[in-house]
Image (tube, rainbow, N blue to C red; front, side, top):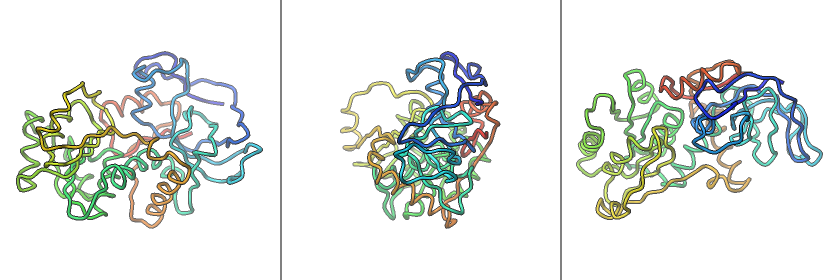
Length: 327
């Protein structure tokens, strides 16, 4: 089969198309012919060596496709089913082995591309607004990277729960996308000379001097200080990613001095710890898409063989919404 190999730790150039043997499903696995694979920052961390990985390896963990074969102990899926997944390794390939435990049934009315684009970022947005810091009607929340894949979904879900959503973006085009997703206020961080001081001042101006109840921050190093300074007393910061790099160690006393703040570094696996929790979240998301109340923006698609270009675009902040590789 055709697949993409990360040949060694490094930049996008280490991603090379190759022919490798077809994988074989185990007794509780599905063998899926890929329709599209999601491209995510975690793929770039693994490719670059930030997250330890064996080399060479086939990157990717998210996608959607049609079941071609099932293991002998599989009970809930059959050949021909359209399935999606957020956490099956080696997804940049024509054939992917997907454990039944992580496979998601895709309902009628949801396309292959949307099914591939939704799991990782949709599940992340869902657990953040429903479980990490449950968003309530009348709250003010700040979402960084409001035109990104998670940002657009987070904004829609938070606005649907009655919150006023403030987002940060980099360009006028991204501002328009963020407002269309439901953002009440949009701040272009590229127009600020000092993000750490100017962003919190703008946020407080928009909230009567109080600050926001919650900040959802997937950017990390460049936004962390501004995020903390944008919170009201007893507010919460969900640091769910680090697209600009990891946050350096800091003194927890800062949380006390800033108003008894809450800080968490959540990850999807802990919020989909059981099959029931995973499918409940996914079913709610797919139902919202099918009903037309949740829009999943696919910002760019690349052929599987052009995975390196997709990584360059993602890391260069040249994308909005979801980036996909199509088989």
